[in-house]
Length: 214
Ligand code: DC
Image (cartoon, rainbow, N blue to C red; front, side, top):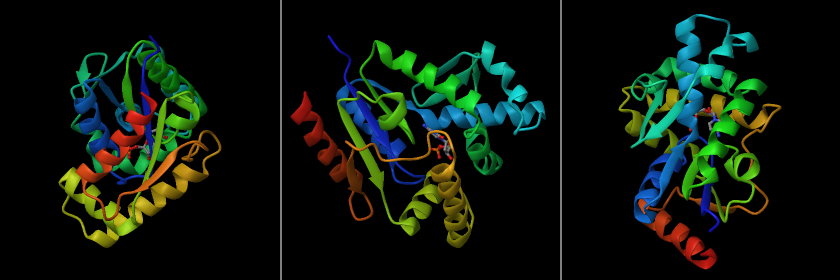
């Protein structure tokens, strides 16, 4: 039987990861947070102290094995879950994720995982590039202030709301204007504005779409 794929895209703080996580539990399938993969690559490149804009800095990807398990990310058995939430990573991840070689490599890893399994995969280019044949495609949005509040809460940060709004705006701009696979809504994705919805309500809306297609 064809695996069932659910693609969830959207900007930072739109609720993608927490909604996807809960959805996967409900559907008893795998959840892949692809943003965590780009963050892990950023963490390794920063640790190696090689220039982030040089494609040769990412040769380590040739021998890197990514495992995303129980909301934790491992690269070659090293657990990077905590490290990737650091502010420095958020500041550099847009540059790293604009590098063609990095994208091609990670897209392949993501497609390989999804090949044989039902998955809920979240990111920026899932419905458009990684899983263009996903049975359900959702594009989550929310007003910027709400997204900033959620990010602060999610990451347990102690920074002013204004600063987080600016950080998110900068990242949104970079993510949606980069040359390769920018953040885009797939033409057949359903838009859900989560600003005034509870997590439960968003999940119910997505479940309705899933049930229509199952
Ligand atoms: O979802 P997140 O904020 O953890 O993602 C971190 C960065 O990774 C984000 O700024 C853009 C990039 N990203 C991407 O380019 N493609 C994806 N599929 C997922 C994330």
